[in-house]
Length: 226
Length: 223
Image (tube, rainbow over all chains, first blue to last red; front, side, top):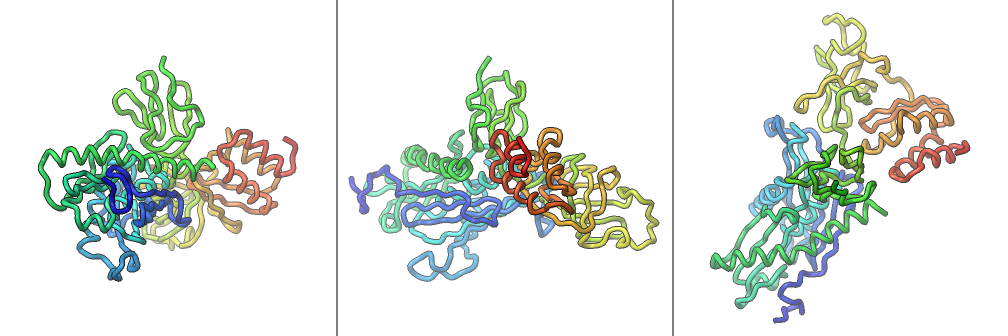
């Protein structure tokens, strides 16, 4: 089956990853996946305020996911929303297991993800960018985090849906995992699926995301060795 | 005995496997998981005997006891000073850390006021709280001069083995230099323009071999 944009079922959109795009940040990265584009910036470790959020044994990963007003067809009202709060939270939980937070007690690592162009898969693009930005910032990590969304259309599994495809899919399943240890750190699902399909889809997602993992490493290599 | 999976001085990223053997020990910026040692950070591989470590390329300064740092007085309190040391958290300079005897009733701004720069020693680090001390022959309050910044990951290169690099720089530029491990450098007198050119070279070519020779050449000496 060929898809609307001529891709195969297991083919992700053209992907570009660039590290070190924001000079003032400790670390940063840009990921563009087709028409979806995310920029992540990491600041710190630095002092954490308000003080009641400080934890004596580890750092707090402060994640802010934000879609800029011009990122969508209809103007997106600026400021936090129910949706962006949710994505900030799941992004934090997707990245925390990969970071040695215990090395920075009482501090915060501030991670800011801006979506400057949205065409489905923004949270996965954001997580991919964030992982590169964290490594770029020199934050100690156990592993990278790589993320991709998969779905099912007319009984067939497809990877990395566009906005148009998302409207007709039976289900949308973003997955984030640590590529070395194959541990899943984010799993959400819209729609419904039998248990068997979910298991197969997760395997399918992990296989399709290998290319992203390669590109993530390539981006860092390019920034630091030339 | 097993071999390193990466060459020495090779560029590695977090999660890269460095060696798969219990014959080696994990050093700085690495961790063991099962039989293998992995890198924690972006950096280059370093092997010292059987200890595998990673020299980072980009870091935020984390205080270590006995480090000399440059700090800026941020706040004056009745029992000491809060010092910004260009790190995640501020440091605390208690009255007992100062060389002079201070009567608790006296005005503390007479010794250190807000905005003053000091060159002090990290005396104590525990769970994110850092104590700084001026009880060291090298410690002092900095007057005049100027402050320049360098990524703390590159400070060891600026100092060189047993101070070889900084001694060369001092010799040719006639600058007075105080290097803080936290990435702040105080300079005064001498040819500061030349010093900044040398600093730029070290910043750009941190991990090239024979850097000291290159710097000597830049400064006008024979290598």
